[in-house]
Length: 241
Ligand SMILES: NC(=O)c1ccc[n+]([C@@H]2O[C@H](COP(=O)([O-])OP(=O)(O)OC[C@H]3O[C@@H](n4cnc5c(N)ncnc54)[C@H](OP(=O)(O)O)[C@@H]3O)[C@@H](O)[C@H]2O)c1
Image (cartoon, rainbow, N blue to C red; front, top):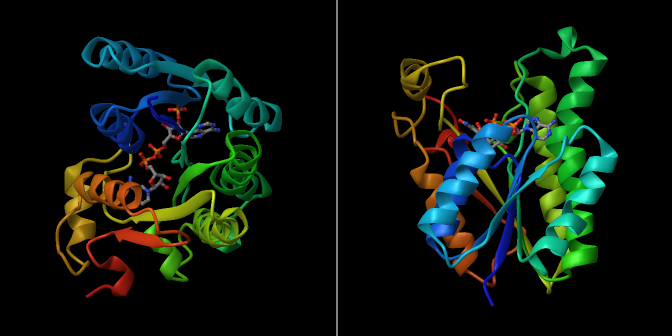
C-alpha cells in the first residue's frame, strides 16, 4: 500500500517543493492550504496527471482556528484510509522586536507556528498511531537575536516540542526537525536580498531548496533517527562572519 503524507502550507514555496519531491518518490499527498486555494488545486491537478498511480487531495484549514486544526487529521485519514507522515511546514514570519510586539502578533506567531503543530502532533499520535513527524524550525533558534522575537520564540518552542514528542511517541512514531537558513526570499523580496544575507554565513551563498530536500531524504531513510535537528543553513547556526 502506498504511504500518505500530510504537508501543511503545501501549495507554495518550500511546501510545494516537499510535495513535488514526495510525489516523485511515490507518496500519496494531502495538500493542506489556508488562503492559496488556486495554487493548491493547480498543484493537485498537475501531480494527478503526472503521477496517476498516486492519490492527491487538498484540505483547507486556517491553523489559527482550533476547530479547523482538529478536523484536519481525521479528514485526511478518512480520505486516504491511513497517514504515515506529517510535515509541519506552514508558518507565519513577522518582524518585531520584543519592545514593539503587540498581543495579536505574538498570538498569531505562537498559534500557527507552535500550537497548531502541537495539536497536529497529538492528533497524528492518536489517529495515525505510527509513522513520522517532521517539524520545520529555523536556524534562528540558535541565537537570541530579537528582530523577529515572537517568530523566533515560536520556533524555539517547536524544537522543544520535537524532542519532547520524540521521547513520548517512540518507538512507533519518530519526530525530527529541519532548520532552514537562507533559503528563499520572503514573497515581497528578490534573490538580491538573499545574496546580501548570505554574505555573512559560512557557506556564503543561499542554500535554495536542495539542502531541505536532502535533509528530508536523510530523515525518511534513517529509521533509527528521532528527536534530531538537521540544519540546512550553510553553517549559519555556527555564527556569522
Ligand atoms: N523560506 C526560508 O528562507 C526559511 C528560512 C528558515 C525557516 N523556514 C521555515 O521553513 C518553512 C517553509 O518556509 P516558507 O518560506 O516556504 O513558508 P511561507 O511561505 O512563509 O509559509 C508557508 C505557508 O504557510 C501557510 N500559512 C500561513 N498562515 C497560515 C494559517 N493561519 N493557517 C494555515 N496555513 C497558514 C500559508 O498557506 P496559504 O498560502 O495557503 O495561506 C503559506 O503558503 C516554514 O516553517 C519556515 O518557518 C523558511
